[in-house]
Length: 137
Image 1 (cartoon, rainbow, N blue to C red):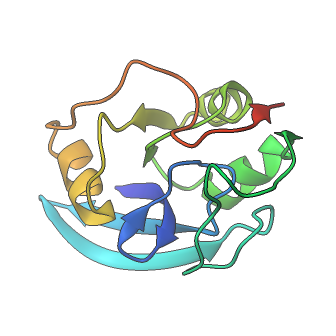
Image 2 (image 1 turned 180 degrees about the vertical axis):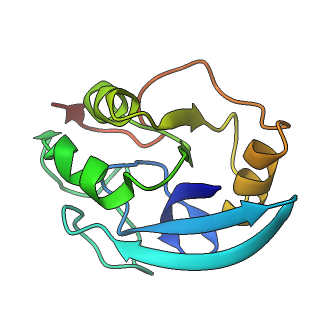
């Protein structure tokens, strides 16, 4: 199964789905990662490897994304697992048949995918992003 993880760097899950510079697509079969692919998020600000923002940095207080672009980019995946996601993106992905799970805390992208694939993922019941200082459209 293909699992999409929004990433800040190749080893760090992004705190904000829509602002993540890329998505790491991990194909998991029989409890092992079989394939890795990085897909660029053309709706994000910074590039892969750069920090998104700090709570003190200047950035728009509201932003919007074309949620259908996320569905096009990730539609071949079974699930999206991340730290935070706005309601609009979640609705769009779930309407397209993707399972959305929010992590209860930080872990590596590989660990998140393997925990999901093996049914051991502890997820957060909350909605929203794990960053601060802005609103979602």
